[in-house]
Image (cartoon, rainbow, N blue to C red; front, side, top):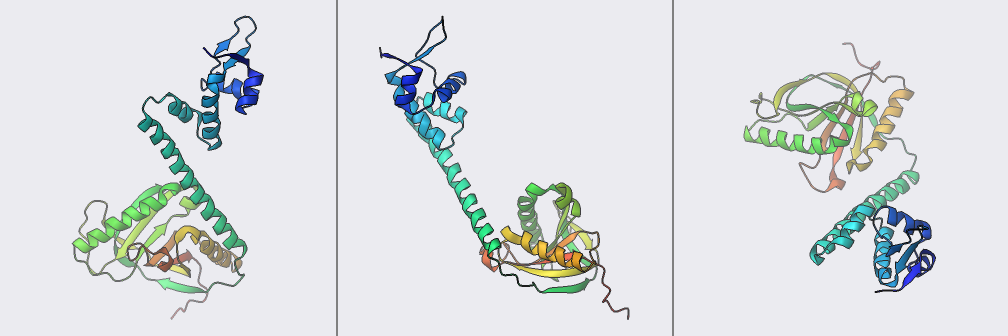
Length: 275
């Protein structure tokens, strides 16, 4: 049986504060070896120091209390090690995201203030094979990849001749309220036979201000921002879905640096010929 020490002495030995030790007792993570029934004083044993050290390190790695408790109570070393590795993998993912965010922020702050080339374009109605759905903004990327992959597979299986690059239409509500209608499409010469989510569509005509975004879609919001600022500055912005044309994307190459995406902003074109 180990010796009995006060919570203060145990705090000094374990480098866990008295407040933290009380909290860990309350949540059942590290309970005292003894609690005086008369005054409620907590006492610990020197045999608990190792457990306290493990807890301190796991919590230092931001492991949630329930997961720490699962590690300490695991009777199988393989299960215990698996829990720790799983958490370390999450930390590595978080670190990668943080590193990427820092890099993007630095690029934004150091970005040269050079105007992006923007053209006005009249787009005629376009027959296409397409997939439409109401999506949540946070699910947009996964939906986009899955829908475009399914669309390309269907067009290929039916041996349809394409008349242009794949594209997408995105309702303003997706950006304004986090949920709205999205469409991905591939213009085709022949009509597609509906199968699965794929249907025949007529992509509507539009007057657009067009800017080209090169590379990964991670910072595509910067190109959207420049295009939106252009439309606002010239007071030509109109309501309507935003349009993207995937001149070169994940269907063509896994190298995101080689991707090219045209972004179209609906506008009123005062410069359009009436002839």
